[in-house]
Image 1 (cartoon, rainbow, N blue to C red):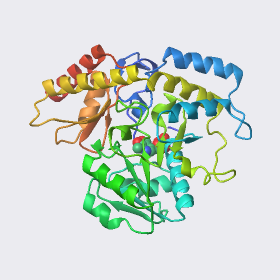
Image 2 (spheres, rainbow, N blue to C red; image 1 turned 120 degrees about the vertical axis):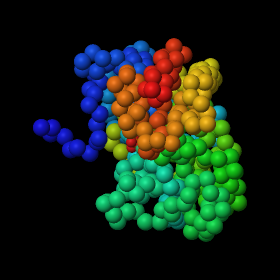
Image 3 (cartoon, rainbow, N blue to C red; image 1 turned 180 degrees about the vertical axis):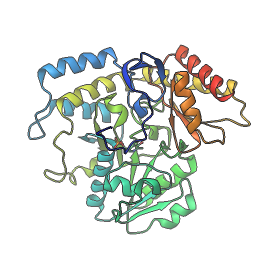
Length: 377
Ligand code: PLP
């Protein structure tokens, strides 16, 4: 009998150790981890630089609260906004919390309540983030939800233009919907959002909780589009496995988040920001990001060579790839587990491949061989 709530459909595998892309279960069985803990372990498991940071910082100071100045947060914020149009950061502990901060910030800044969100989106499980999420399965049973989230079809320019009015505070979207099936924003849709942002006072929140921190081959995925969001939320890859999240915002938002308006006890504690700094020092680097793009091209090519394009599609960008073939993927994911490749579903019909950004070509070859042996069998 488990003393845990059974709110997760856990797989019958207990991972107890990991190094790079490899993980090992309690029976000593080896797997290639193409989940990265759902896009979290950006530098792989037990990266030596992260291990060293945790060791050093844990001997110095773990936590002191936001009652005091935080040199670690100052440094991390500066690294995150460098060369971007964004100016300020706020740190919290998870993706949902980052989105809560974004939602509160746009409501307070604009004095309006209406936020446009999209079908199949996922923004988290807290009330605001859940209300913003365009999936009934996430929201059912928890009403009444936070009001005035308007859910539209994703990538539908006309529906968007028709929905925006003088009461609209913000448009909130993912650049690639992760949980919803690896659906990328189209160039036309990004342009339409950009045009609305330019011609009205509507703010744009880009949820980069999954796509951010190098996952799609650039620091943030919005950099590959025309969009210049007012707020970017982030978490997952930021801590490389240590829980940390945050938002970045434009300079004009500075006065809205003034003293006492928002906060969290643990947010940006010295241990969390030390680890995140180590991650950013590795990932926010042109050479590193170029390797992510090369590995993405390599994995995409290998998948396309192995699986005929008429039936199998490869979606996504960077090392956030989706692989679909029109069938329910749950049984295949179980078979892949058994064959030693850990993957994660994105909706019912897409297998998500989210290896650590440090994955090697040899590991990609091994993963594609396992995919072939399981799926083409
Ligand atoms: N936003 C996106 C795009 C996500 O993919 C997720 C988690 O999967 C979240 C928000 C929620 O993040 P967390 O689980 O850290 O609260």
